[in-house]
Image (tube, rainbow, N blue to C red):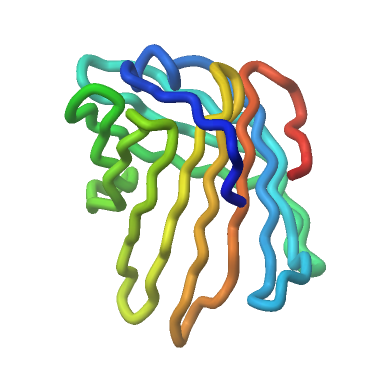
Length: 153
């Protein structure tokens, strides 16, 4: 997923706040498409916290239905945040000052390795590779500002 274009983000709130379309592909360890999520996302500011919400349609195997997720981005510095799950537990650090960030999240016996890249003022993506005894897959998500319906990667 690594691209050659990187767009530095020095003001994370100014960059993220607003509405985004998103398209997430769920892949097997071998790269086969298992499913996808297509929908919308928004970042809403409240002081030094950005509340992230996403909603849309999940297609996974024979299942198709609505899905929702919420996270909290606690701003910690220029282009930086500590990301928390909606129930309060820490998820990961994020630093987009150079337009790119690698991070990890241990989840019981599994490990999530995340990569984020900002392509321009209106496009960014993230990729989470998950390894472990209970989970083994890749989640690739592209975000486009204000675009309806999301796009494939």
